[in-house]
Length: 134
Image 1 (tube, one colour):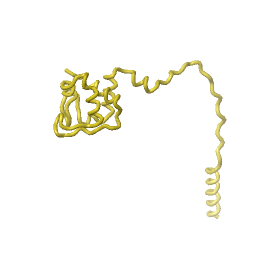
Image 2 (cartoon, helix red, strand yellow):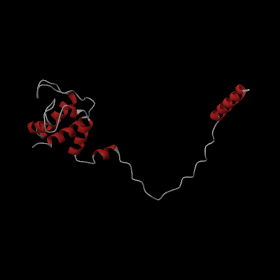
Image 3 (cartoon, one colour):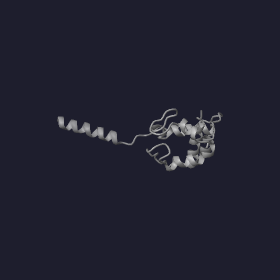
Image 4 (cartoon, one colour):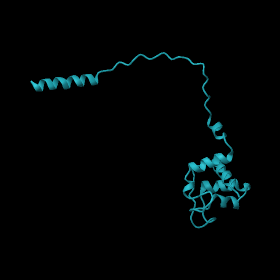
């Protein structure tokens, strides 16, 4: 008798849990006269700050800080040392070095390439670094 009651209870639980549940009817959407902020395009977002600010954000989001510091040598030179050595005329050259990597300018330890980085973003990074000139 206990087995029959237990089996019936188990079967009813299975039926209840597997049955299709009815959803509540969808509430009508009310209109609002409040104007929402228009979404910004990627280009508008990129131009929101100065090139130096954008470059700083890119550096902070990349792996650069694992080898470089602003004011002290780590694995590679400090950003201030790089800024002291180069000028605005070297932006393209330095952006290429960031993308392709390099060796020998600051010692024997090579800088890893960042092939996935665009030339424009690399230039923004360089502009930030050069802005740190003392």
